[in-house]
Amino acid sequence: ETGVTQTPRHLVMGMTNKKSLKCEQHLGHNAMYWYKQSAKKPLELMFVYNFKEQTENNSVPSRFSPECPNSSHLFLHLHTLQPEDSALYLCASSPGTGNRDEQYFGPGTRLTVT
Amino acid sequence: AQSVTQLDSHVSVSEGTPVLLRCNYSSSYSPSLFWYVQHPNKGLQLLLKYTSAATLVKGINGFEAEFKKSETSFHLTKPSAHMSDAAEYFCVVSGSGSGYSTLTFGKGTMLLVSP
Image (cartoon, rainbow over all chains, first blue to last red; front, side, top):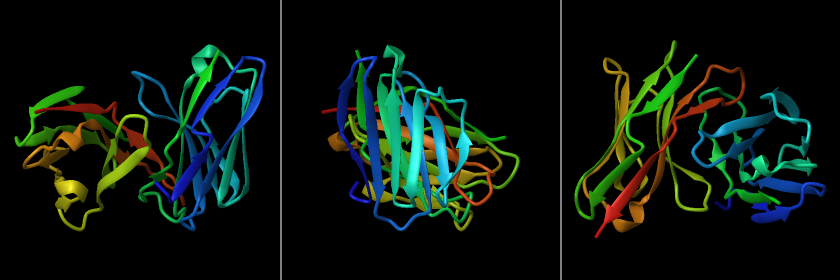
């Protein structure tokens, strides 16, 4: 897990709060991903950045705003969330050079929206 | 398009007995296939990866998987279960995006290990 780190590990926020999730990878990769993992649902891809450019946005509500300042860091800015946004948010990275590469995951941020 | 079906949502075994977690895939091209494991409140860890070099793939912690193209299957096995194997396991197929990895995840199989 030391290859990809995420902070904070746990976050409780009200619906009117603004917070940010941070992801950092130490693997020299060029692609980074945000996923949402909810109970009883398959893993949902939210955003993809490849070489700092956003390449996928899977119909994610605008209350989630990603930022990728460089190939090692990825943020997910949160504002006016809903209770159904409570989930485990996972960050991952991959080399970014092939579509058959494995992805390496961080430990996740457990988000609770009250 | 690609898809993955994990045939069991839960599998229960006794410690020391074999483990079999079943996965079928669908893909219009020659994919990479993966198994990931997730322990409670943790991220996903790569167990093993198939990339067409060999049909029998060995992974970490004594797990292995066999790619069978004729059956479009990629089942995960372990000869002897350990209590620490209790976790959720995901079968994953690679996509066809350009330049970066796109993975399609199965719904997961929860492995329960009893003493």
